Amino acid sequence: MSSLRFAYSTINWGETPDMAAAFAEIREAGWHAVELFNHSLDWLGSPERVRDALGGLQVATGFGSIAIPSDPKGLEIQKRRIEHAATLGAEAYGLVGGARMRQRPPSTEEEEDLARVCEELAVHGRALGVTVAYHPHTACTVETAAEIDRLLARTNVLTLCLDASHIALVDEDPVTHLSTYQKRTSYVHLKDWARGAFIELGRGTIGIDTPAFLAKLEEHTFSGWVVVEQSRSEISPAESARVNADYVRGLGYEL
Image (cartoon, rainbow, N blue to C red):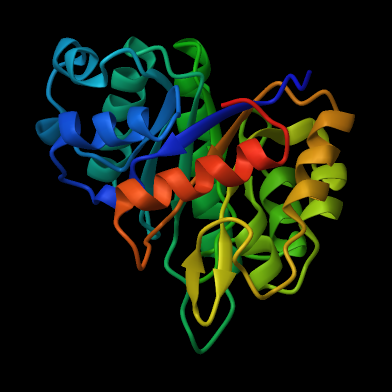
């Protein structure tokens, strides 16, 4: 039996959904754990309120975004969100950010700023028992392996949240990344891509080998969360969650 642990992101329901309804749809699709994706604390409310809405779902991970150039307010907001995630029992907290200028690659100063902020948040999270991970992402400061290498060289505590789709979208190999960054990867994201949009697992057109990606995680005895992160869908979030659950179970994994 596989030791991989799967969770489902709330991203497809938006940043300000009816949380109880979203959690119910995730449960009904068969998932048992969630990633809370970029919900502000004034929307989420107290940890007790979130626990009541979860209806038995486990909080696996949280997720937030940061801006570059960094600002003290944004940094403090992420610290409060990490603290909130820790109270809910999240093991990891993902970060994405640094909007990428279309006309040029990130500057050294931008990369250094990103690394400094991420490392500060990683140190903050570690003290709370939460592993902080940066998510390499298209149209952000860190997209490619070379940029990941520079980020990791500038940080010590920070880990990675590798996303198979975003790796493939910059013409790199998700399975190779898992081997290259094995020691610094704390959790991963899964989704697919077709016709210019993210799509349910197994329906993509850019050759993401999800079974090989999961097999490589098993080979590494990966202990982090595998989060299916369906950013948006042409079908309802509830139906999308069911389709993705069926795909994962169809590969022989338990949710």
